[in-house]
Image (tube, rainbow, N blue to C red; front, side, top):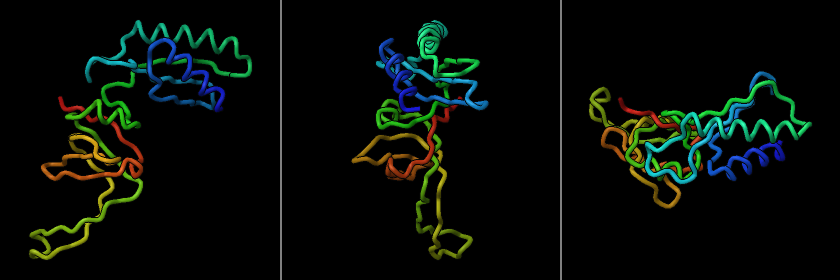
Length: 165
């Protein structure tokens, strides 16, 4: 699998794109490759159908030569408006955008609320929706309704953009 992933990554990179994600479904018969531009102008600069066609043709030829890789269908796509955020550079690129973040280990915070008659209570929070404000020393700054959370990148299980329309 490592050799296969390395082949895909290298081929996509040589064409000027970034491998965002790779899904293998239906018992390995469907390969889904998600790509983006390596050096986008801004957060709205994304791949188009011509980019996907170019990468699909290249990968199709590459995989035809590699006889040990068995698949029925190859799909190449942009990561979409709700793209996954995995790397530090992803969070930097999308500062100011809204994102959904799910943690591996929940954050415990003390909250004062009317339902507890003004007393503090511990609340665990594992899922967040907020605006990316930046990164500081390996921590994501996420603004959730005015409260800015510092979330260690190593504690993020899944994250993706959550666009506002």
